[in-house]
Length: 160
Image 1 (tube, rainbow, N blue to C red):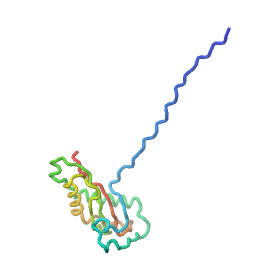
Image 2: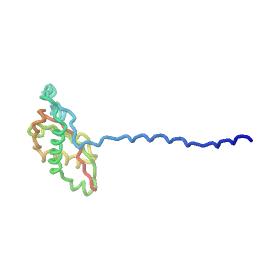
Image 3: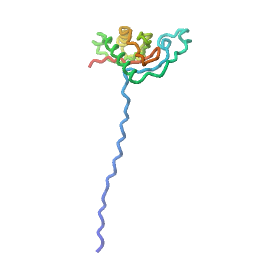
Image 4: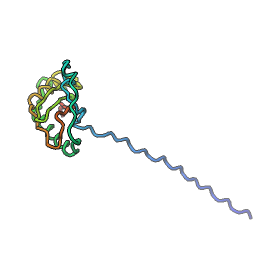
C-alpha cells in the first residue's frame, strides 16, 4: 500500500507590520524664534538699528520649566486682552494670525507686527490692538537672563 500523501497546509502569509503613524508635534502656543535684539527686524529698519551689534545673552539658556511658566503667564495676559471684533463675528470670520513681538526684561513691548495674516484685516488689526492693550506684559523671571526676547504666537479667532 502506498503511503498516504500528507495534506498540504497553507500557511497564510503574515500581514505586513503596520507602520507607526507619523506623529506631528503638537503646535506650540508660544515659541521663541530669535534671541537677538529685534527692533530692527520687526519695524522698518533704520540705519542705526541695522548697524547695532546683537546683544549676547548672559549665562546659560533658561530651563525648559522656567520658559514654559513664563510662556503661560504671557499667554494668560494676552488672552485676557483679546476681543473678537463685532463686525468679524457678524460675518462669521475665523482665522489664526501669528503675532511677532519683542519684549524687554520688564515686559515692555518694544515692537510688534503680524508675522502671518489670518486672512481677515479686522482680525489682524485686533491682534495688533491686543498687544497694545496687554502692554506691559509680565516681566522676565530671574531664570531668563536675556535682555530681550522675540516671540511668535498664534492668536486664534473661532466661533465654536
